[in-house]
Length: 275
Image (cartoon, rainbow, N blue to C red; front, top):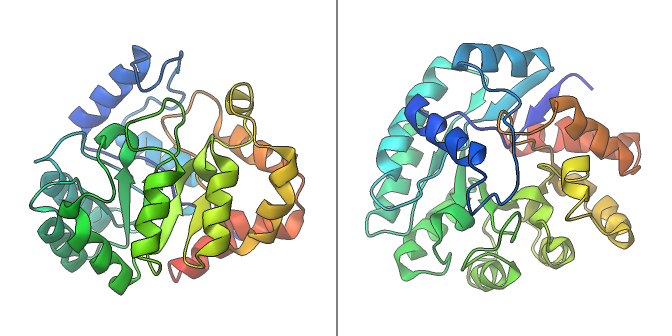
């Protein structure tokens, strides 16, 4: 393949990223296990490292843990994308009265993908405050990468139920299920099978770190193979406790074939984002 496209990487304002790393260092309640950050470098070195792995396009996944943060984060992300041409301009939102306006503003700034973190944000995707958000994203056809599975620790609105209700109301929503929906893999596969604009990213799936506690069920591999045109490479770089190559080795261990790997690691995201 010509290169990798990684749809789940994190670049954030330095102070926020330092707080995220401190949370992982302390094995906070949403982590619940030792999690050493492998690529704890300054921004310039992280960019060089990611490009050195052969990644031609990536995201700057960032997310607010409380209301009142999204607009400032989106302004930072717009600036980051402007000075980082190989970054897919990323934005975010929270369940708050300004959510629809924040998303409209980010779209006007050129956002190409959004991040929605139901575990960290602890909000219901069906909150009426978000009604204007989902309609805009569905109409614009802009994907939203959603951490909605209950791993590594369940939240009040994680799991397949809230997302199933959301998709029933917005079946055209281009939703990307992060981490293959870990650990409720099969429930989220079912949603992808039902809704043709739903995709899944592979972040941390099949790695030794995850397989210890939340192994992907072998019986579901044929279903994942059948969805091969709607699975996208994600890694969580730099916030991973192992080498980047382990994410790729994990996908190889799934043993779904060369064409599946090529589609997942490059072709599907290149098509989705028009690269």
